Amino acid sequence: MENPDVPMYIVFGYGSLIFKPPPHVIAETPGFLKGYVRRFAQSSNDHRGIPEDPGRVVTLIHIEDWNKFSASDSFPHEDTVWGIAYSIDPTYAAETKAYLDYREKNGYTETTVDVWGVRNGEEVVLLHDTTVYVARPDNPAFVGSEPYDQLAHHIWSHQGPSGTNKEYLYRLSDAVRRLAPESHDSHLVTLEAKVRALDDEAALVLYLLSVGCRTSIRLSKFWSFVTRPVVVL
Image (cartoon, rainbow, N blue to C red; front, side, top):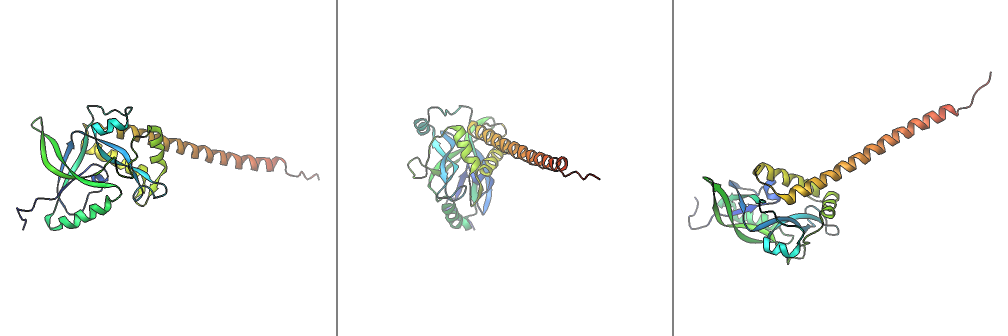
């Protein structure tokens, strides 16, 4: 039986937790945060990269703090950080927390946030003091702002034990679109477009190479035919 004196363990997911939820979830509450940006500003040496060549994953950053790191990467007022608050079965709260502590071990620490939603046309706080894992700017794996073309190529070209870095981006972008179709995340939209463009460029190069190989083979066969010895009878 649930102990009313023990607060429910609720954790807010804004990155991979959206498309790969924690275990023992008994309720999901979609919502958004105020005062934060979601940015690919954290290196990943344990999931989407390796220690000697880390990938990039998202973290939450206070808008005021982000303005210190990048004056060129503004945060449009219409952008919103959407995610999902997961309520964990109290029986497995400690087990789930230990799982998340390990999963988010590469520079992430716990803090609390208010999760907002819309009810009857008005923005209201749905959940107070919800746990969230954040990679603070002072952690060793924080990389801050990078030019979009450079960041996109980095994401496109890296992978780690959990899969390719671009898969992380694609799954996150798709999950956010499904979660809040009416919302817009300029950072995710821009990165996804640039990384998919790199995919298209790579596919075109492979196609041209394959066509070139086939053409080369045909020319080789033709040349062998026209230069074959002629037998005079």
